[in-house]
Image (cartoon, rainbow, N blue to C red; front, side, top):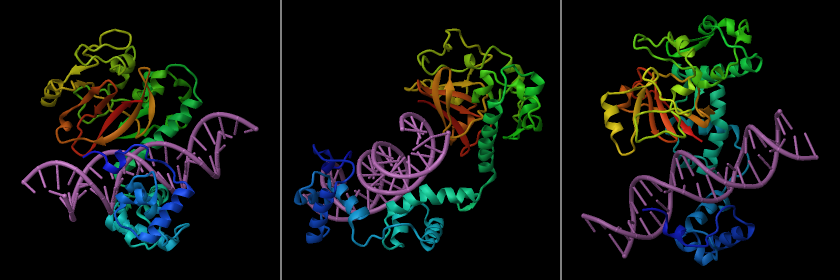
Length: 341
DNA sequence: AAAAACTGCAACCGCCAGATA
DNA sequence: CTATCTGGCGGTTGCAGTTTT
């Protein structure tokens, strides 16, 4: 278990290899051949672990390595092999003489993957982007437009009707209304709450089974969204009495303790997870970072687990992380994870 | 010209499976 | 049978060079 014994030893060099080190390793392998890597550093006079020597030899010093750009034939070959083998880089490399798994992996991640995505092909399946992916792309497009939109806005508060007109959900996807795009109500938007990605949440009422955002406006006219969300910096896990950053108690209007099966089990667990129900549907995308209650957070997506699909609303995992489960999540679909950064 | 953002790639990390003691 | 060692693998990180602002 743990680290390799060769790596535990003190004073082993790490990082980039110097020409002198390369020379020592090359000389040794040329003379004695590849054998027991763990004994190579000692015999070659290197302050490296055997694993590091092996990697340097395989990826850089080996005389049969082909260097330089990948040819079109190689690129096509990699694409075909990846379609069959997936991320089995070693197996792919075995089919391309002179290329290493690391080299192919880097080429894939930095070049081929992006190329496929630009062509509208899912790099994992090698098939055209699915509806689900399309929704994600829509989100990205949405935020691009949103940024442009706010960049040219004034600071007055929006009218309710304008808001409802501007932002609405479309059966799990999202749409910008034409009036927003044409800028007819552009000058109405620039409050902080709107600029916050969490402004665009769906407050489920329980009477809203299809997820249409009918309660958005009423919630918007509450004091602030920020006070209705857990403050990650000062969240008290020992206590189910939630307070916001200003010290005022959160009302059950904003949060309700989820009394479902998962709620009770996790609330009593050692990490003191607590489920809250607020019915959020965050409108942001993977990797986005933003300020939330004065705390920098990063948004991630991950698949909903087998039991998690029962959950709706917010689950606070610890002082720096919480999840948001959209209404009606199914196993395998996305939940929304926010990490403090 | 300087700073920030981006990109490519070398190297590291952690896990796993097979070999060996 | 169990523990440990080792090599192999895929994912990830860090950094240097390049491009953009």
